[in-house]
Image (cartoon, rainbow, N blue to C red):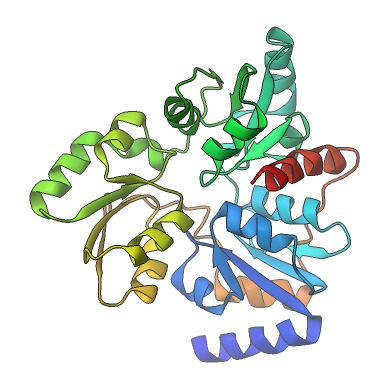
Length: 302
């Protein structure tokens, strides 16, 4: 059945002049059929260099929105319309405008894990892979409002030796990962390197060997001689890590670190999406233009 699904998807993809993009947290079978798999930064860059007419985005809603913002002349399909992001829903445009009014001299740095409405109210976006670099280059001296993830904001500010005005948002999955889990993992697997995502609380990040985006993790393990790694992020990344490094061992820091929204897309839904051209994700003007400026500012700085 899976082989037939894959064949039908590939046939329709060719007929529609479509490309399939998948985030590193997607189910393994979805990653395997994608034309490109990456983290938010890699996917943002890829979305600006696509020749196809249709983008099938296998991720969550804000990611498909970002692809639509960067490709106004293309059709962006999200195979699962209920694939949302709790962190992105923790702040809206009205709340950000109120925060900006309290701090009129501050630059607004917005994590890409946010809605188009919030991006449109921001000066510059960042991803987990480039937040330190972008903030240090784009706003080296100004006060910073950082939304919506307080943990990424705290970790970024700490690396820069600065203090940010933080919004109290977080990823519920990454917020569960703790320093004590890392201690226990080191006891069970001495010699393994612990890699953790910067959306995790600072004590956990401080206890890890490296703090990296998912794309950063994929590159990092290929440069190391160590053969055993503890991975502190959503478990979907394990598929790519094991596929690209079959000689190495990867263990999740927490087996239950599974994002249900990232798992809503299936091969069947990709097929239906291509067959029926659903569901098209669009961002209305002027929100799209304002959000595009914030994203392109990030890409230019990076």
